[in-house]
Image (cartoon, rainbow, N blue to C red; front, top):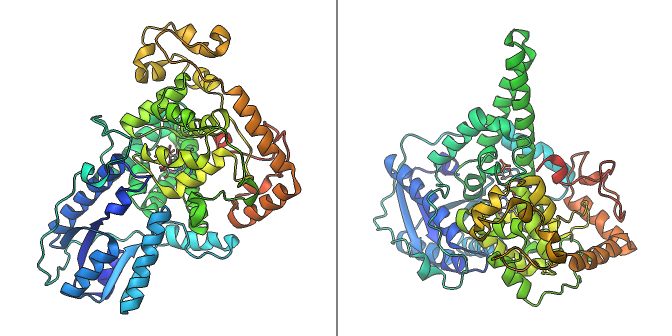
Length: 510
Ligand SMILES: Cc1cc2nc3c(=O)[nH]c(=O)nc-3n(C[C@H](O)[C@H](O)[C@H](O)COP(=O)(O)OP(=O)(O)OC[C@H]3O[C@@H](n4cnc5c(N)ncnc54)[C@H](O)[C@@H]3O)c2cc1C
């Protein structure tokens, strides 16, 4: 975007706007403000170090831009294309309308493989290739021009001035991921050359995902790393590893190691494609925040009156893996994919919580909050997209499989510190499953909710209306990868299992 602007203009002012309405919105939290502020301050330093001009303004976008235009005048406006929540979608429309009204050229540049106004999903791939793979990343210029505008930046508001209702407390965790271009580059290099070999098989457990996962999500979400750079560096590393494998002189031990790397890097590469796949879904259906993607699933009955939602949000459901995951998120802002998915299915199936009531408090917990992934994923895990294998997680099984020594749950639930391992692992079988471990909250029974919700969803999937809706959703929003959603046969109840044609992201070792 910066380079595009410089190609056409001799003067440049970089403007960041703290928009109070965005940070007062129901999905916003301190984690997001802190991450974005960190990234923006680092950007401001980098602009000024190159002789460029950076300005911070506090106010609503159209008001700020209009005031600046009246005070100083400018003849072009550049922004990146953002696939955001409903509020930023409406903000972008308002800025576009304002620019058009005053005859200002407003250019939005794409950042990812998400294509705006895409008419036909089958035409997406060549555009993605040209954009992300065939075009080299543009380096930031060593020197930047300024403008004749003389104006001081506003000061950064405190979080408490921006938002008084967010329930996620400010975390004092010292290991919170810093978000800046420098941190992004270091994390990427570390992952591609040191940590990444353990990715395949290492991201399922919350004990290992913190080191085996790339941990690049905050950088992708807040724009401190471009998808183009990320894809191209990953591909270069895959090619380097492949050449080691193909070279017999490498020696068996080196080749074996390179094969492990190759598997992990390819698994990682596929996640990068998922990023844009889901972003495209949100871009093409910006109303997804409030309406199920599939019309067949818009009238589901949910039973929770707010009681279970409160227990879920506070991490006191009596299911150690669920409560530990929530408390981990409250402190670190991070959780691996499998646990994120488990939290949604426990809420929407077992606890009868409507996905719409869940999605905003859930979004508040993520430091890497990315609406283009978050809303489509919440709906997918809640089972209301209708084209994926339905998978309902048992938190008891996830505990046994992913945390068999109770390291994760003991870390985040101090009340379980002295409980015997055998009792923790069998928590759902103690006293008929209803009474939990001493000192730990009672366990909410998930079985009735799971059954009722599965019955409802399978009935819809098996109906004519459900099948027709699934076909439409597949056509417009389905993955074009041959092994994934397109092979799904809607309406089959027994569609989970090794021999199933349908796959979920879990089957891809997420
Ligand atoms: C309900 C739910 C909500 C989620 N919300 C977010 C969110 O707000 N922001 C976010 O970045 N991720 C989200 N994810 C996806 C995923 O859990 C995280 O991207 C991942 O855990 C971040 O860790 P990492 O950077 O080490 O990822 P890696 O596993 O190293 O993956 C690299 C990148 O690929 C992308 N990616 C990975 N998995 C997925 C996926 N399943 N779908 C789409 N893109 C993916 C992300 O950009 C990620 O940073 C969500 C998943 C679920 C189930």
